[in-house]
Amino acid sequence: MQVPSPRLAVAIVEELIAGGVRDAVVAPGSRSAPLALALADAERSGLVRLHVRIDERSAGYLALGLARVSGDPVAVITTSGTAAVNVHPAFVEAAYSGVPLIAVTADRPGALRGTGANQTIDQRGIYGVDPVVAEDLEGMDERAVKDVVAAALATATGDRLGPVHLNAPFSEPLVGAGEHVVGDVTRRPRGGRQRTKVPLATLVDAPAVRGLLIAGDFDDEGVLGDASFLASAMGWPVISEPSGNLSSHPLALKHGPLLLGSPWAGAFVPDVVVTIGRVGLHRSVSRVLRDAPIHIAVDVPPSLGRVDPVQSAQAIVDAVPVGAGPVDPQWAAHWRAADDVADRVVINELGVRGAAGGPTALTGPLVARLVAETAHEDDLIVIGPSWPVRHMSLYGGVLRATCIANRGTSGIDGVLSTAWGAAVAWGDGHPSGTTYALVGDLTAIYDRNALIAPARESLPQLVYVVADNDGGGIFSQLEQGAADFAADFERVFGTAHGADLSALLAAPRVEIVTVETAGALQDELARTAPGVRIVIARCTPRESEAALVRELQSKVDAALS
Image (cartoon, rainbow, N blue to C red):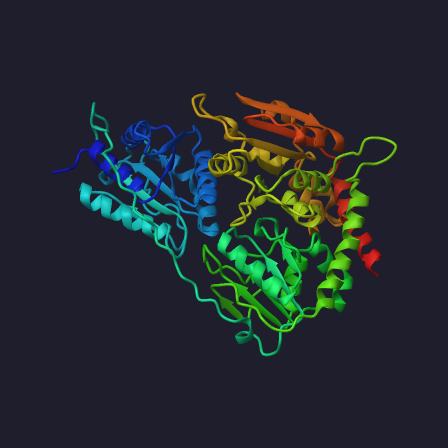
């Protein structure tokens, strides 16, 4: 006898909560009604926090941001058909970032596939990311459903973090009065993995006196402590991508990628480079990985195995090595002195401290620097891809705030939604903190549906800073920005939108302000206001920014020669 849809939905929801789900994001739909009503009941009982979004793509990325910051699995619920497909981008990012996102897609019964039944596609395994858990719950009773959901959640939160897909076909009748009640649920404790720390000396043949520690994308607190200890014990300079969260270490370089991109670095090739997490933001970093005699890659949680982008690692280990041995104080001193030179060039060229004779015009690098200087230890920065993350890395200086980014696939889609979810989760543990999201104009336009939230849901403390240079700025720095391609550049790469972003991004309960000078941006960032705010920073033309980026590297090179 077939189990009624409301009872199956209750079984799914109860097991999601037991497996650690504290937040769930729902997009409205008919076939998913049993799940939505069960989650609404669970919300009334205080078992789960419910978020509702009208756009499944935004819903998926909102769930991604919640899960990325909280560390808990977060469920996103959709109805059938293309609704389920629209979660695919967030699911792929979760797979490549190691985020426990749980996609529960309601479906028509399997017998309707291929019959022309309305809103019916084959949803089994639609996300196609390997490895991934994908379970179709067709024909199962409540006990079997709970066992499958529990196993899927254990995988998502286990040694190899990542998303799972649960496809749930529901037969009519979908709803029934009094049939969507979620019972008392006991949350299961989550286990942890012990990692074996090996001495650095066992990985290198000679004393590793001249080394570099390079932090890629990761945010595991235990790993941060181990990495800090290794750098301090060995006296190695640290180069951290923004989402590596090591740029405030005493040995961290404020402008490491600029130094590696300079001829100066040719005289200071390290004997060994230890990378932590996923690296690859800068070509200058990739180059030093190829050139270093020894490269040791540390595959930290979420342990996805993607930590050797130029295939240069002699060893891949699952924990930061324990360092001990002779230290050459002059090695770090050379890098620190060069870094101070680079910082003076950056400060002078960007006009960070203000310019005499009039207001300082905004550029992408300057916007990144001012956001970095504003955010404090209790704050979170969500950094968009393309130029914003590179500007923050190259010119931001010391980052005191925790930083995250969608570096799994580095797409511009869903960043505003990710930031909103991250801000909600960040506020749980840091009630006095603010989340700053630094994004480009195309990124903001792409995900403007993220700004539409139900009136009954509380707003996080979130400031979006949109660097507006009217198009795709980073392409001016790439090969297609050369004069040879000028005839087609604007049409297929620059993609100027010519839009008034303040009008384009307008949404209920969201404050928007536009600034055009450094002083105005500093004042706006310093202003404390509850809720969600968008600060549109109108920057100089893209061609000017590209010239500035080239000039900064050139002047650093000259200053170090």
